[in-house]
Image 1 (cartoon, rainbow, N blue to C red):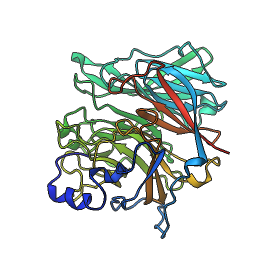
Image 2 (image 1 turned 135 degrees about the horizontal axis):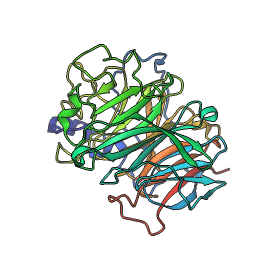
Image 3 (image 1 turned 180 degrees about the horizontal axis):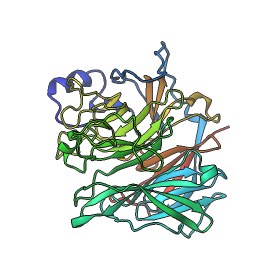
Image 4 (image 1 turned 30 degrees about the vertical axis):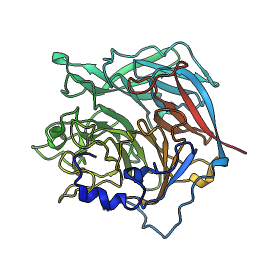
Length: 413
């Protein structure tokens, strides 16, 4: 997460590697397709995770650069924020300017899917994440996170459920109507995931106002937990307290833009942005394992700071990489990646692979460094390949004449 780092914290860490990029292996050349992160990952103790395994002594094996190749699935997109695979292997894609697209048989349909609601596109806001209901094959429900303009022009995240039909989206139901935000167009969070418990988890940024992350009466800077119809589960951690909102699952978050559920444990992994400079020394991006009712510290703790009752991150990155979409790999195309955690980097322009034993980090490396621009989302396809969206036309990137792309990692056999 975020904040200022005393020099006494920086210097010992820097002595383990060749500079402050130690956590993401920036000492190695970005011309390499993959570079191992050789310093031991910073691992915070995580307790009370069901079925979490104790780590065994294992060696980390870097990816063989000759084991995969990169293919372009499609291009001509504009800020593809999220992708999901339908049962027929078609790919749904959200574009932040407010379009839902579909790729059938490897071809992008030039016409967007109809039925989207009014979306406020401003700054980092627009049409963002997409999640399919666990029983999508039966009910055809999909969930979209997007920004709306509320009273006084304040922007806020809304989550709605739709039924996907041959003619477009129908039967709109607001699952999370949104809460007062700010007029600023940043820190929306807005990642969605269904947990192994069947509940919908929603990340919300603190909208650039750090104190909101610690206020339990304010939903900004939180991870929420809701039933699939938007009602509140009776076992939520704060459901019986009058001094807190019952939707809250965890708090003390700055801007979590990635979420993934570990298949074997059900643990919830989130990627989170560190400070942007105006609210602390730039850097300190994180991966957190999120638990019910826990406080992840922003803005009270960041980097290596600790405080009673506030959890440090599972993984900490000293320099800013802007971590984004995340997934766990379960396919057969890359057996050496089984159970690994992957997440895309915007500023870091790489895909980071984290090898785990339960929730214990064994090692990590970055793939595709500086090769394909800003990377925003990553998903495993039904073919066992990894699909990644680029984000070079989002206002922060250099732009690309051919538009943003979806690429995939394919075994080089």
